Length: 85
Image (cartoon, rainbow, N blue to C red; front, side):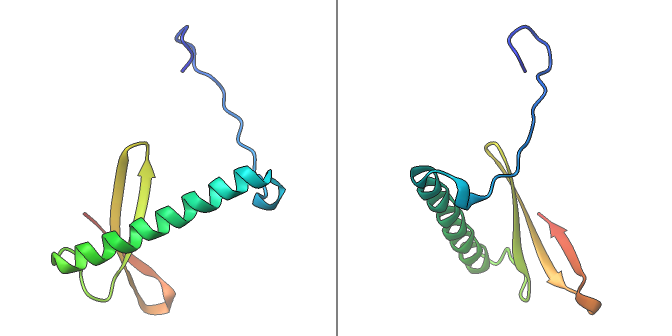
């Protein structure tokens, strides 16, 4: 929101990562690798603590400093069932 209290309009643009400058691409690649490592370590920790059901995979959603976690279990016909925790 702008300081004057009016809502700002945001415009989203799809950008091909290959079109980014090399230093920006390097930072983006580092961010993606760090998030993947975090997800893997979180999955291991949840399994060890008994909070993640067997035969499921971890689904994460992030908004600012909050993280949503769900467990997906493959169903018949390729569908999935989500269990939110």
